[in-house]
Image (cartoon, helix red, strand yellow):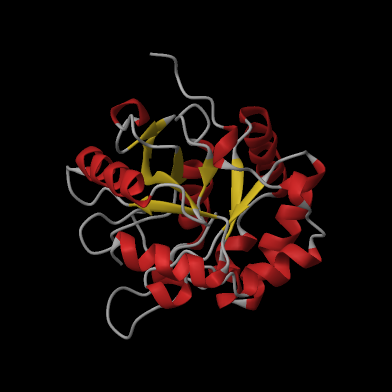
Amino acid sequence: MSFERILAAAEAAGAKDIGLTDHPYHPGLAKHHEALCRARERYGKGPVRVWIGAELEVVGIGKLIIPPDQLPQADYIIAAPSHYDLQHFPPVPHLDDPMEWADRLLTDMENVPGSGAHIIAHPFFVTAIMRPGEKGPRLPPIADIIAEMRPKRLDHLLDRIAEAKIALEISPRISVKPEFEAFIEDWYRRAKQRGIRFSTGSDSHRPLTVGKLGPAEKLIGRLELGPRDFWHASQVEKPKT
């Protein structure tokens, strides 16, 4: 996933824009962004416009794991409210309790407004629940967790997201569970009614999938979303220096 290979794949896919979005698993993300800026300058005015972003874990009310103002080279910030390390930092006291999971997922989403994020990544998607392994703690089915999410709280969350003008990602991973896809589709319809915008992308971790939206493309069609329904990094107002 070098800059050159990613851009070659994007060009081959006919992409007009590409976002290079990294995770802060090490304390050098700002320097990494500087390196990406240099690579972007070398690339020049190629056929693909390059944007630099960061996907940051939500760690408190209006708080991301790295304050966005510490990433001056970032064109956009994505909040990741459901990235959990079950082995070292259990996100809920009882990992088999769907009510605790529902409350945690909703709380983390509610903490995004005021954080400086422009997008919420893969809402309510938890890898360990969607794709449970043979080993590890017993986790509740996603359908049981969804059943514990009260409609009024979900609607109030959408109202806050709309007020903060934060976009919701339509991820290619939405189809991993039929009941999850149905829940997200209904929730996104209500988001659209409130004027909330969306973002999408291939969420690629290898060049082969760059530019391929997979199931996200079908959901976009069912929601009847057009260009005006989508957020774009060009809409971000950079602070004056």
